[in-house]
Length: 169
Image (cartoon, rainbow, N blue to C red; front, side, top):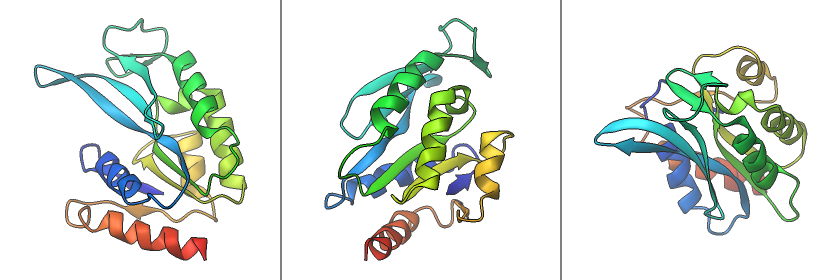
C-alpha cells in the first residue's frame, strides 16, 4: 500500500509502474482528474483496458458527496465489477485508489477484500486519512504501508517494479 498527502504523486507513481509492466497481466484502474480552466472539477476511473467511468464531479447530484463533488456510486460499482472482478490470468492488481469516494461503493470494498484475501498480489494507493475500510486496510498484518514523499516519488516506480518481479518468482 502506498500512501501520501494529496498532490504528492500517488497516481503518477501507479501510472509509471503500469507503463513498466508490459510483461505482467494487470487488472485495476487509476484515477484521473477532470480539470477546467486550471480547476479540478471531478474524477474518472481509467481501467488498464482504457475504459473510463465518470465517478465524481462538481455538477453531479450530491446524493453521495465527498467534499464539493457529487459521487456516482453506481458508476463505481460498475467499474469495480469490470476491473476488479475475478479474471483468468491476472497476475497483479494495480489500484489507485482506496479512497473516500471509492469506499462509498460496497461492491468496490467487497472486491478489494476478496483481492486482499486472495493469492494475486495487489499494489494500491490508500488515502492518508480515513476511517472504515481505509483504516482497516492499513491495519492488516499482511500489508506493507509505504509513505510516498516528494523526496522518494521519482524512485518509487522502480522500487515497486523490483517488488513485483520478486513476488513473481
